[in-house]
Length: 364
Image (cartoon, rainbow, N blue to C red; front, side):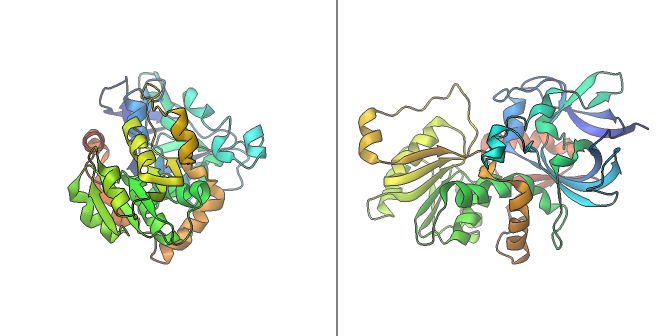
């Protein structure tokens, strides 16, 4: 039988969602229905809502979430009702060229599901799942490839952040940049991903570890999570970074905002031969320019980083170990706990660069 749940439904670009009922079908072959416990509000959700990323409408956004398996479809043996799970919004197919090269985060088919409806409004209008998962709802239906079992000893609600913010930040440091102990690092942007990345850099032994944000109010949190230095962003912040690194610039600069100007700041803040890792999701209209001489002379590496260059099935258990050890502090990054009705205000905080992660707690 179908199941009716409450969801935040987005009907068009740049419009706030409506809290409406969505009708979910029974899970089909290879599918699972998950009763949601919590969902993080990620900047990628804002990028879908404002048109930076293409999204068919209407849609239920949200992709960073946890819940409990409520029902399984035919042929499902990997999960069972009552099991606690983390959503994986970019499930790899394991068979395309990229997957076979060991790059599942670049899977050709990872986002196929978001292009097809997964549910209906009560009037029969088809609804699409934002980034495959549709986590801003009391329940959702996903394929088994979009689930990772919750590791033992982790709080189910705060574990939502493992599905995007934490794995993206940790992966940027360890999978993409491969930061080594004693190397200097700069983190530009302290939202959920940036705060996760900051902690991962601390755990990797970055020194000095410089955090930059537009909000001076984030200094205390940044330092508590590992920053040795904190700077408020301004057009000349790269000069301040160089003063903190004997005039050279940092070994590793991480851009976690998704703006061309910030990418350029990361570049200007890194040393000759250093590495700039772009983690933030920006607009295709926001172009960054470099001249040929500086590319040659600076000998820097500029690289993108999708989903932390990660494989959640492999990396989430590793992250869980750091949570259990008290090294990765998930709860400390949550600055606002909200209900579904609070999603529009959470989006506005992201636009203004305020706070860390907002977490939807279902039933809150």
